[in-house]
Image (tube, rainbow, N blue to C red; front, side):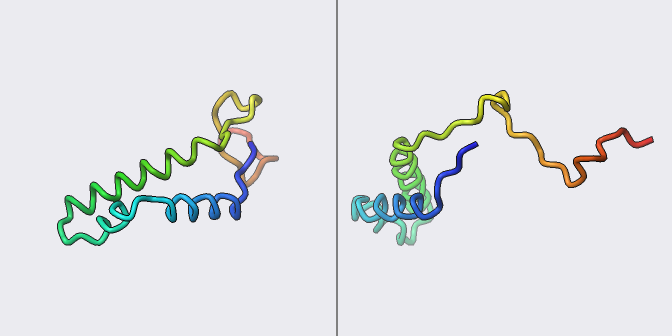
Length: 80
């Protein structure tokens, strides 16, 4: 599976946060926890919307699921 480069993702998030509406960022500092929670949800939606430009997919060989890596790949016999 391809991974998104950490530097590219960080830069993308920085731009997304810098371009967010000032009112959205200001709501994060509210004393009322319900308004803060709503602001966090709105910010998460904003970041998720910005993530749509990335193509995130599983490798075809995995059947849509990532396998759990094994610490001992040579020893996969049943315990018994």
